[in-house]
Image (cartoon, rainbow, N blue to C red; front, top):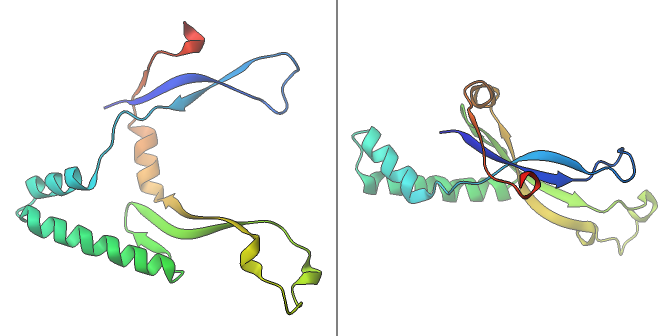
Length: 138
């Protein structure tokens, strides 16, 4: 199955004035959801679908719990997940103040995923590409 992409317009911050730029962006072709994963595991193994769903559901709950505890979740041969914060910068002089609330500077809470090197290498070397229509190539 190829990775589909589309040519879209973009801005180049170092580019010349009055010049239009374009780039390639991967296009989502669908979702591979929890149910599909459970069915694929069931067909590839001797485990029942109910058992697969139970294990995946438990894994999901443990992952959520341990992310909130600040732990990095390492999924061997897939990658690692870790909670991530984006925060505004603030003057260090306000840190010792009694009224200082560091949480008020947090703009966004997210989850960072770092793929395993072998997985990334596999996708990069075994990929095929397919371009889909774009307004820029009309």
